Length: 330
Image 1 (cartoon, rainbow, N blue to C red):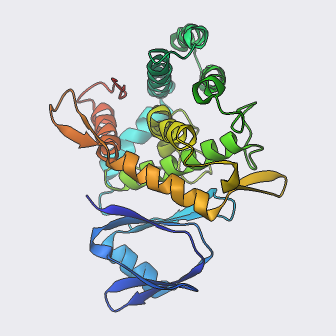
Image 2: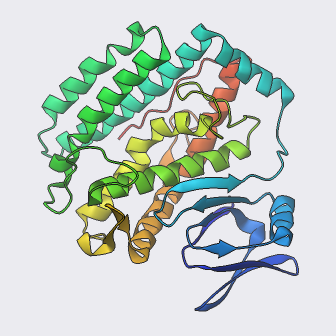
């Protein structure tokens, strides 16, 4: 499977014959494009049309992040796998209120089940999680009764709030307190890591959607409007607890990231470049880590697991097989 490559420093991305070269103040870096799936651009990167033409030819997606580490947009090469039939099926399930609500509930249920998996994992290791588990289980019983997307989103928000309240107990680190969810900019270290991890997951799912017949512009839990992509946000909800959050627990719990990896600016907190490098290394390790798939009976990576989730969604939209979101079993 092709790799994700991260460009953190500012510089110029150039086409050099039939490959890419990234030139920074530190020197030149050649990028092996044949095994590159996407480039994550965090620095101030300049590039030209020749670079985009080569990326289109090699089907390499460019994801752009601003100075604060927030995802800002993508260069999405022409769709080689785009299917008019699949777009019609996606639109049909979006325009039909019953079909859309059914899918949206599945995403929220899947997210809730994986949040519970995380909480129960830490309960088994002596953390006092029972009260939060019971609260989350009670909130999840409300999902089936919801008759519209706004009320469903409200339940999802309450579930996240209960789940995030357990982070301080899980981590037990005075320097990393959750307090409350804050974004753009995040107000403390833990919220900064949550935002950074979620941005990475959103773009990872978007890259995997590109390898399927699905159109990322048509989501179900998140409203498809003038926002560029929404389907990746839906699917990411399922994987946040087991990918982004578990990565956070490791880098903080093992003190791989400390308060020294943050800087305060513009009323909020940012990860330093060294902090991003630490997190990205753990993120890539998480993407490569394999689990034994209970249906296939063989090992698959977390990156592959995301792709398989999208294939399941395609089958649901075509009426071949009812979609059931992935649930971690550990």
